[in-house]
Image (tube, rainbow, N blue to C red; front, side, top):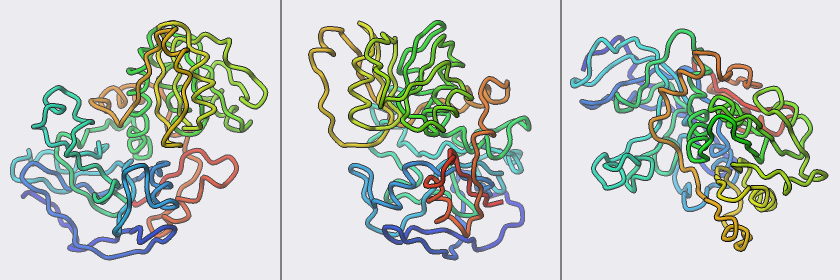
Length: 342
């Protein structure tokens, strides 16, 4: 292992139970042969982190032991395993926070996000990045240019979700798109849809501030689901980024024949769908589970100015105040929160 001077221990924010966090001192991990050690710079707070903190679970993923949250991160490589080019030491990177097995049928088919043996940051029992150092396989530590800030580099992870949704939604130049939810993923997905060439991007959200934010970052129009009926829109693609059953059904009803419905938001485990609408219009209904091969295009879209991530940050907290960061979404006007480790 080639390394710079590194401390033996690090500070870690640990989820001890529902609504319970604590700081611990742990050994700095040592990179294996094909891994790099990354000094964490910035970590974005994801809705999944909040779910684990407040609810202790997301669907089948249950927190039943202490867990380190955080999977949207950037940093700097400070040490490398013996199989990694030592010239990578010192490189700024954005982390793709997953470790597929690379051997199963899904991995070999290029769908490594569906690997049944996946180890994903901050998904029980795998620890995440609310800490000072992490290790990751070197090819999932993506170099970022100086044109991208540490905060934007961390937010390449949620941008990857938006890119995956745009791909699954078959968005092309001229597409008409409806997005339910004006939260971070909805706003980022609106930007991704615009970058993919969508001509019309309509964001639905009951909160006026979020509609305004969506209009600022990519949406050509917005609507209030409490007063506006979306069923006559006849969009090419509907993307749910909120997980609310009523929003999913209303959005699905707005899709033209042979259009696409992409489910991204996490909410109710089950939703009653209008089967005749799906059948008679031959709708393509699919989901997004993480991403594959999205960091290079995300970095390009940000560095080229086609997508803006820095202006989305509305709150910043140190590592010692992760609990405040997890509750920042309760504040009016909150969109994206960053934990600044360095």
